[in-house]
Length: 138
Image (cartoon, rainbow, N blue to C red; front, side):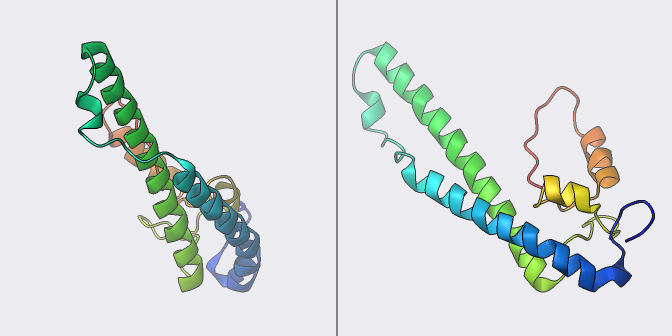
């Protein structure tokens, strides 16, 4: 571990030990997301939203869109969690996908699916259009 708290590549054995707890948490999170996805009601078919008056149709369309957005967010999180688990198994977890520097362990503990170090993540966010909300799965 370097003086600034970042894991160093020379500490590979220590990093892998620290990643065991993170991997266990990722596996738990994966199971929780899978359970949530399986509990959610399926999306209504297009026939279901064309019945009733205009208020019913608008309400059904809104409900369908909200359900779709929630399922999409859950699927994005599931992909990010599974990707992090794969990176741990490939032994390239904790390395920034942009600058290839080690990612701070505190960041990985807070956001275990993080693919970028804090400075690269901030740089990417600053380049995005201001005023837009972005869901980061990194």
